Length: 153
Image (cartoon, rainbow, N blue to C red):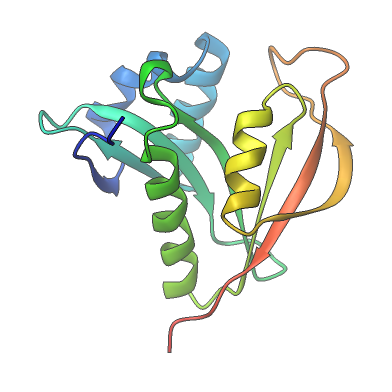
């Protein structure tokens, strides 16, 4: 299958109404809160009708000069068609533009497809942890992963 034509852009308030496609109500609340606090850059992959098909949160103001990727998601029927890869490349480019040379993320064990994607993109595990957030299973083990990226000149 080929990837649908998508454009990656910053999330706008109107996009949040579509975020129910990416997770349960607790996840949507989290996304709305982060957007309102403006403490994260949310990138969305939109189709030709400007409707979000995927999204990723990029925290670029980390104290240790790393970018943290959170809450990556692609609508179920379009997973495995390049949208997640496009979002990850855009997130890395955003970090690079900000002079950040390391990107890190967490992935839960129940999501092996996402872990395979991150490994294919060059991310490597560096720590095990239990992810805790509203609505998460208990326990919720996974790994933290990181990747060294080149910084924009």
